[in-house]
Length: 193
Image 1 (tube, rainbow, N blue to C red):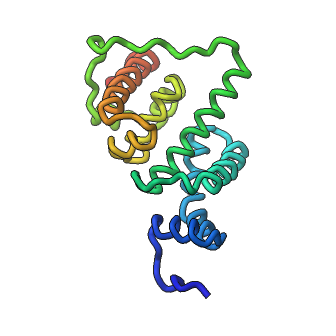
Image 2: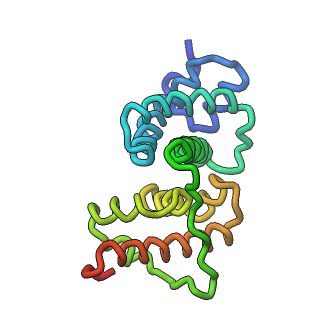
């Protein structure tokens, strides 16, 4: 019998109970809580349901094996998304490497040439245009934009997930938004952003 059966346990409580007891029951609760979200993220990044299903399983194996490394410095959900994003980025890079030999991302734009793009400008773009433009920018820019605008993650959570400082996240977001705007303008020259 589980002493916590009538109580909804927090992520941190489930992690602690799993690490203390090694009972699969607690990991299953975490899996059931996050599997749908991880799968959805994998589908949006990998663009293939079969690959997303495989990735979700692989990600949860990684989470299970690395559970003892979760320090609690960030939320457990942030840690899971970090593992998910990193796994998907690695998968995308491997797929691209197999397709072309030189898939070097474009060089970063110097800071003084990066135009400030407001959040409202990004959010006003039509969904179909958004998907097209996101597929045109590099993975790192795409990931940080998805974390901010699709997942609603804070700068702090993004920094924790990507192991970056908050100022680095802010600069990457600024550059990613600028590159997004340039790609949108190039693709939809007659549209206003």
